[in-house]
Image (cartoon, rainbow, N blue to C red; front, side):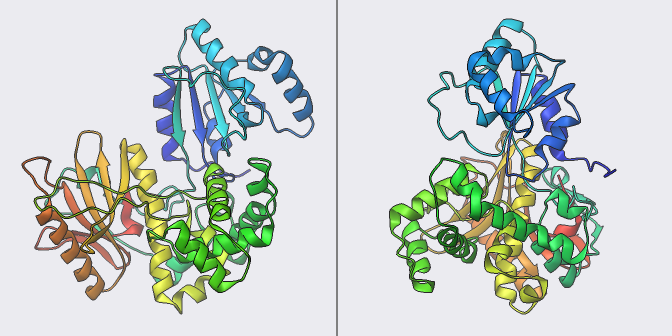
Amino acid sequence: MKQYKKRLADRILAQKLMGKGAVLVEGPKWCGKTTTCEQIAKSVLYMSDPEKEKQNLTMAEISPKRLLVGETPRLIDEWQIAPKLWDAIRFEVDHRDNLGQFILTGSAVPASMDNIHHTGTGRFAWVKMRPMSLWESEESTGEVTLTELFQSPKAIFGMNSIDLEKLAYLVCRGGWPQAVQLNGEVALEQAFDYYEAVTKSDISRVDGVSRNPERVKRLMRSYARNQGTQASAELICKDVLANDNAGFDLDTVYSYINALKKIFVVEDMEAWNPNLRSKTAIRTSDTRYYIDPSIATAALGLGPNDLINDLNTFGLLFETMCVRDLRVFADALKGNVYHYRDSRGLECDAVIHLRNGSYGLIEIKLGGDKLIEEGAETLKELSSKIDTTKMKEPSFKMVLIGVGDFAYQRPDGIYVVPIGCLKD
């Protein structure tokens, strides 16, 4: 029997259940939502169980309340295939007048909201799950914590055991729980299987719109080439047409990207808008990211050796992995991750901003003294532009690296931390 690896979402889910009648756990297929929720649920309804799906759907239409009977918290897995359950659960939460009654999981946004008449405000809480961070997959030592960095420590220490070859493997394998349990080529194949499932069926099933798998693949390859950029839909459309004359148009690009967002394959990053001393215009375009770097490597047909032989691509996809981990950690700290870019070209890869106004500035680099120095200079330049009379000074400035033996603090106060040492 596979041993359950603890997730940061365990703690978040438990806390949410203490304050709301129902909690919706959303995220991509295969990221471990159901398994995580099963750890705390006292009864379970698997809506997509092949032997009972038709019966469940019929019951959801004629008497949804019957599906909600069971010891609490009751898990309703893949609730979105029967959207009428939403209002039924909201009604039960109101009338039972108890907290922690239901857990819902969803790997897609409902195809239609016509049968949902209440937003769930005050009754539901939401939890976003992603593939596993390196800390959750037990490949980061966790010797350096973001919690600690927000306290501006005078010194940090951690030893990193992830070398370039291992890092390339982890980017290609991704954080899929099933892949984490496997080794070698078998583990790497899991991302390709996920990619094939998305292109052949999942992207069409989400809203009932039939999409040609080959056209989906062309779009996803372009999205992979534009990881970590603010590429517009127009640019992506041109990129697809330049690489393969598929007859794409802008409406098709928007349709495909929106469908990928609905099944949590794509998770773009919003722009950070701080108070600056100057009148520099801040770019507000979202930054393009897959929810896991392995989707990009699968879309491009790349393996670990390909990344090692193309360090530029490796760096971009390493950034996607770091963003995944930072988002997982930020959720645990009740924060959000943003990207900064202004009209003068100054760019910061990630900004973690907490509810209390504290924030940390992060540059992501594959490794090496030159790149670390470039990242540090960017952090210092951005920090000098922030108007600290209107907002707090950054709690920390960090260069997050892939390859490096140690975590340490530079004489200028900037932390250098390998991803293999970091946790929440």
